[in-house]
Length: 396
Ligand code: C2E
Ligand code: CA
Ligand code: CA
Image (cartoon, rainbow, N blue to C red; front, side):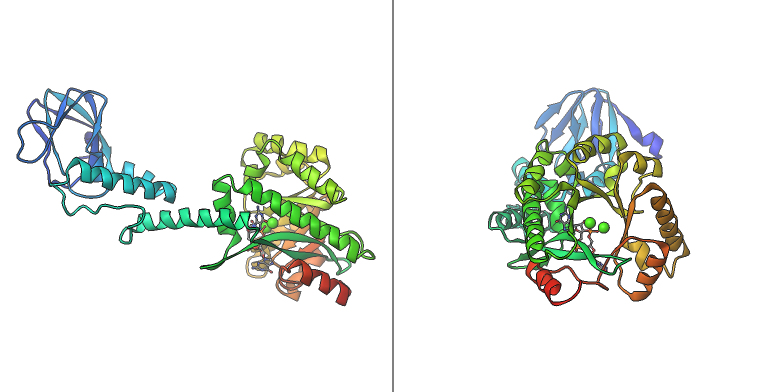
């Protein structure tokens, strides 16, 4: 059967569509006519399905033989929904939804035909050892619950990585980065738990906590390193946070309470947020109005055209670390840094390079006119206490 032929199939009244035990390569949508579903060996149908119903999907979804048979009651036109059409979507679905879906499906299967498919596993959320899809989903559900608990117990820690002024070689500010030491699994990467928090609403309270802790640290710095030019604090902000109606109000209040000018807070917004330019404009406008500094993070990995950059009025561009790490192997990386620094200098935009790990990278970036550098060459992210100690011990 070719793809085209397979889209609609006609069955005459009384004709078998499939039988129990058949392999399932598609589900069906009844375009016209009626279809009877029946258990093997039974003449009386379990159900008569009218136009508009879907049938035969269960065996496709859980990749097992048909447990019921289907027969055309009248002449029928059936639209085929191919296995790949269903499974491709399922594969891209959220793991939590997939796990719940599998549980539901197995329960349904055991209810529809318990005697026909005695071997069908009956999953519960407690007993799922053998199904990897359910395991992945369950792991995520547990991690999410643990994250909520960690947030309530204030177990999400902040570390601060210095950004160095490449003209003076002195620390100019910090990027706030969060850490989660999970009791059982150890360190969970921020990429993992931040994206988990973003999928739920947890990012909103977490984001506020990050703001409070970062501003407290900046306040401490003001007091304990009073002779140093005032530091700035870069704080990562996700699209979900920006979309929260009172976000700007709340962060404005936090900086005010800590006696910090909003200019000293650089909100790092990743370039991927700029996909929808109109939306980005709307989200950024109130931040500008409140006087926050805006920094475009991971520059070069996303889609922002130069025109958009200019119009969205970013104060800082942060060149993604992959350009820095490949600048000596890949001529295009170096060209990209060169072009960006030239353009930024003409537009009075500050340029930061992140992921600087060796002195050679630093020298070239300095020569290209990059303003600020961040990376393991200067320092790992530090706990607040360690950062304050470094500042009091050495000329940073
Ligand atoms: P990012 O904003 O691009 O942060 C920079 C990452 O590069 C950090 O990883 C930092 O530790 C790492 N890094 C710094 N210097 C070097 C270096 O010299 N070499 C290399 N290879 N890496 C370096 P981290 O802390 O694991 O954070 C990863 C990502 O997680 C961050 O990427 C950011 O997108 C997200 N993230 C971390 N903390 C927060 C947060 O508080 N809020 C939000 N919304 N996102 C956060
Ligand atoms: Ca960042
Ligand atoms: Ca970055």
